[in-house]
Amino acid sequence: MRTIFYFILLFAWLNVVCFHLPAVAEDSNSDAEFIAPASWSEYLDNTIVLGTWVGHGKTEEMWVGIPAGVEYTSTEKLEIGDEGSEIQQQHLMKTKDGKVFSTGGGRFFWDDESDQVKITVYGLDNGSDFFSGTSTLIGIDKANGKERWKHIETSRGVTTEYIIERSAKTQNERSMRWQKAEGGKPWTIHKTRLNRLAEVTDVFDMTGTWEMKLPTGDSMIIKGTLGLDGRALFAEEIQRKADGTSEKNGTFVMCWDPVNETVAFHGLGANGLRWQSEMLSLTTDNDEVTMVTRFQGAMDGNHASGIMTRVIKGDKMTQKFSDVKMANRKDTPGWAKFAPVFTRVSD
Image 1 (spheres, helix red, strand yellow):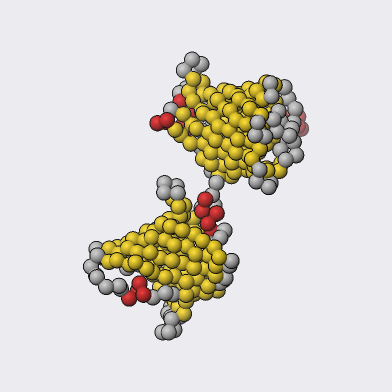
Image 2 (spheres, rainbow, N blue to C red):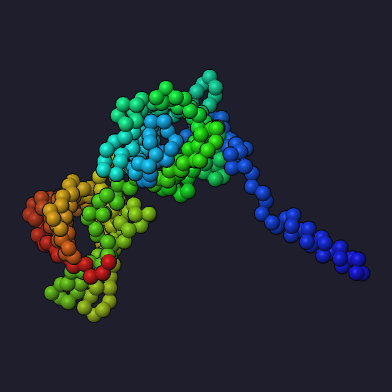
């Protein structure tokens, strides 16, 4: 019995050692997990590169034409072009004080001769040092959101081979890892997807709880909250009555419209109202910020359009209507003559 007991203990120990300890990781430079796409369409369906990406950091000793130790902002734009037959690339690197020190472009395409995805790139470093290069896709690791490329670049008469790995951490975060094929210290550039709405909300801040008290004792409340990784502002319009009860009157979302390249609003009312608007202008004057939008909407078959001007100064927000037109009225409706002033009561 004792022999059997020891055998059971030995089996249990082996089970822990062999099956429950972490496996030895494969070489991080192994290409085994990277599978090359069989077609250009397959690459387009699985690529992680598309979008406009912004990164910040300090250059390292990697490229022939760019010195190490320069604080930079990098912007890379990649979009499908030529009716889907290529991905067009643009890149721009600026120093901390805004000086451009690297710029260029390129194209991703399917090479019929080799049946591979390739990239050709070109550009200027420091305004005068021309560089050009070609990348060949080694493969895509779909499970981990990675692409691996072999890149050969010539700058200042020197040709260098690199291994480039593009990785997706989240839908709005990317990294690009450069390493010379001969080895050495890699350089990883972290990037985030460009957020055009943030450029607006950083200046025109509608977040928080805004209140306007009415003579009746009721209050009109607007509650604004950023969501979707800061790419939308969601707002609720609430009527708080004098007796303490509340009623939700409407909701709207503020977002970036990539088609028209401006801020857009989309709103719904509890009474069936549906409206939308687009930003025409955004101006600042010291601590006063003014946004002008053109709106249109309808309720019960009645169409209305016009201009709304919102002004934020400190903790006050004023809304004014102008040039209001209604399909079923020739005069200006009463609500369009009203210019409510809201006070931010909490962030």
